[in-house]
Amino acid sequence: MTAVIPIPADLRRRYATSSVRRTWLASLPGLLDASLQRWNLTVDLPSGLEPWNGRTGIVLPVKADDGTPAVLKVAYPSAETRLEPLALQWWAGHGAVRLLHHNAGDCAMVLERLDAFRSLQVCDLNSAVEIWGGIVRLLSIVPKLEPGWSGLSHIADTAERWSDDLPADWDELGRPFDRWLLEAALEVCQTRGAVGRRSSRDVLVHSDLHFMNILGRPANAGYAAIDPQPTVGEAEFAVAPCLWNRIPELSRADPQAALRQRCADLCAAAGLDYEIARQWTIAREVDNALCYLADRAQPGSISSGSAASGDAQRSLWVASTLAGRTLSWLPAAHELKTL
Image (cartoon, rainbow, N blue to C red; front, side):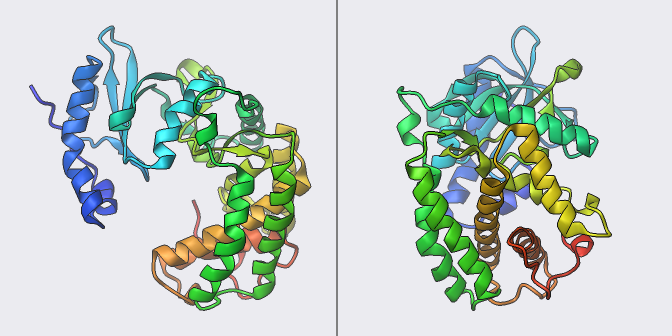
């Protein structure tokens, strides 16, 4: 019998924006049912509850035929989601969620089940920083000459693309923030991109390693990263997402100094270079701010107080603070929209 699985409302809204996305959304019940049959899984979702979902797909709690708890993840097909099982295979459960099965055609995976209620977002911050650092050390494996590695983007290529895209987007969006911050981001792209292209420090990088993407394993058996968005390059590229998390916990007396200290603490825990992490964070957060504005089609309106502008304001606060001149017209740190 075909399992009746409710599709989360958030996912339905997100994928109702184009005909291609709506087609995938309509196919999702069939994809889930095919995966359940393929791997002999049973749905383990309490009555009345929806599956979990993220930005890229749906995550359904299941049990294997031997009763082992797991999750079935079916993602929207994209370059990013097609690379996820490759990265998880290479990490083999060391610092990342363990991959049990996958089907490339459907972008479907069976993963070990982690504790969704025990992320580093709710962990004591000092402990979270240390755990995050240990995860980064485990994930920072050196690229190998085997199938799949060549399909990963290099961070230096990202920097080269940003060198063209950031100023064009800034102009198109009505020059929504101070030029000096844009120029600081472009300087990072030019310097770190050139250094990164000839670096011998290339590792596999989880590029979305914020505190909510690290979950506890059952029976307090440590933590593991999820949703890797893998790329290759300098490990310091991974620091930025943890600086846009948990901003309200920064010192009210001097949140700018506290943010810089958090960056230094994360780097110390992971064995990373603070200055390189600082630079990449500036570039990443300027790109994030422009993406938030473009996605919501709000050129020049980041002071409007909307949810989208709040995301952009948070990114610009982090970027400008690490660049040494927090934009004076932004809300105070503890008034920013939080994640």
